Image (cartoon, rainbow, N blue to C red):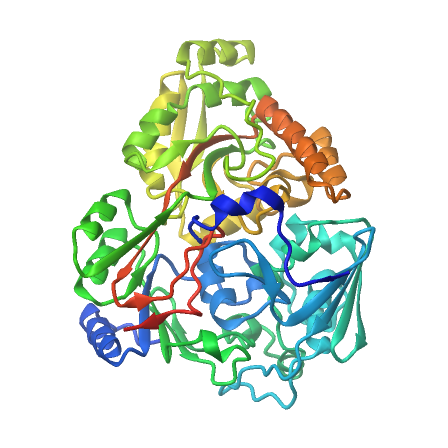
Length: 552
């Protein structure tokens, strides 16, 4: 049956109100950026976005964070199916329609005609987008013998987290504008999953050019897509520049001529730039900035219920965190209300589950263990640690939609754990390095992290962050539990939502019993911008999209 959008039930009523998660030289100064923004503002053609960090790269298949997706997928690329701006409804992207077999093993996509890849100084396409590009995009990720992958071996963490490196049996070109995916096992979430950023479509022709030139790494450094903006220049920790794509297939959604990312890791500086007009939008404000922005007549504040969770994860492959009694003790020792008061200044709710209450299948019956340092010390004694122990506690160096101040949160947790004899040494790294060391290396003991929902399905919260397939990716607890994983596997086979919901509710019970991580908070989401920014849609999926935006 053909599909043009899919709706996973009652979740969408609240979801529509939720919030969505340039190269100059090193001599670029705030004054130069201010001049750029001022001129652009007057012309109404350039948007300057104060982003929170440098992307690790622009090949969205290689990464999992919104910092990377904002710079790559959201600006440069398209996917076969897209999420409608401001909601979790699926709408056509590079595929106009799609068919799904009754057993959810075969998916056929009917591609859009007349779509052009971007023309850049490093690539001039000689044909339109077609099935070859879709086949190459996915075969590069799933086929270790793919020529491009062999020449430029990289990992694809999101694909692996979903188990698609194993479950996609084939990707076939049926004709120039029809592609068929065949899976080994049923997956009712497949279409929603490939609407995500990791499945951004790249040019097979560009890849072939790079392969022949021995410059395969340029796929990550000089991106070429079909999306709304054409990448121009990048300087790490400084600026990214884009131009509007003159050949974009959906021109009615592009209203600015230029897009600039002013990379500004310090939240206070981002706020200063916004207030002075040096940027028109800023990422991840601190709670204290919200009231400041509301009192500034030149600024606008968009807000909504956050579709996210912040947590402290326990590396279950490291001793003594492999012991469930130890994890339960650490969990009981965290004073969550105090964290919400100090870190979020009240702009969040306490989290007890690995998904927010607005997600269908949320298990309302589950309750947190009470905050009880005395009982926690008791559990440590039972586990064989009457005098406690020392571990590392990693804290993110950047603000995220789910955590505005990881350093402060780490200090509060450090203090909580000290009360039960656990010494936590706080560790941090630059954001890309933080992710690499934690995901690929599993170097951390305990880690502050979080998740912003990517597709509106419960599987995205449970499978992607806690499933066995994700142990070397976004499963920061490195936790593989057969009972939990079997429940997720059964849920992927079933189309009936109430039946699926029961399985996910059971999986949450296993999670709560085994405590691979301690959920801390569901943060409210905010977007600050100057009042001349029009058309921005806050999305439940986190990150920032710039199509649809105009400037007065």
